[in-house]
Image (cartoon, rainbow, N blue to C red):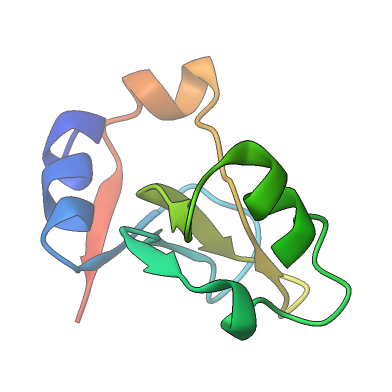
Length: 95
């Protein structure tokens, strides 16, 4: 499948990957799309409760974005497709 179809699947909560990726078990997921109250911010967060107050907002909105489970068995926030990924025709759904 192409990236457009893969992106639609991601938007619906599915996991996708490229058959041509070098690492095994790599995949993409939809993340974000929720808000975090100041008291629920992670310790050592780069955005603090004080920052939110200074910005005049009551909670931190985490906008929807794509994250990746990597070949190194780590979670990478904020994946961005390459030109090859955008035009790849080897996208597949993980079931």
